[in-house]
Image 1: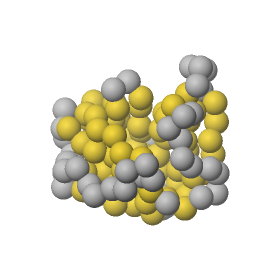
Image 2: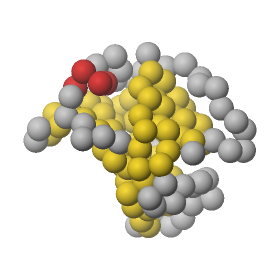
Image 3: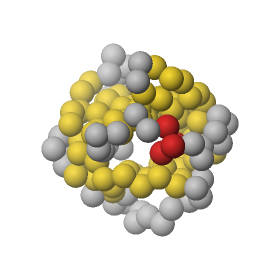
Image 4: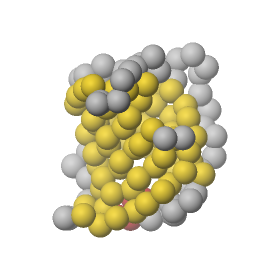
Length: 119
């Protein structure tokens, strides 16, 4: 099971936690992503188009060029007209917000997942 999205980095802001940045991505009318990332690992700038992959299997990647990490789905919650899926990458949080729950229906709480981001 995997989800592949083309996204635009809308904003990169500082977190209240030292050296942590928050990436805000818009992937379509149906998907928005917010993600914590350490500033030394952040390869992305505002307005860049990226490919975001969420997968239960390790995706192919180019070492030193792509961002790849693994973690666990920790929650899925309905909020307003969206369903939010929360992923913990060993403490760093990703929130994937979808208007169409079918996009993430194949992912369940405590699934081990891989995240890949590339230019």
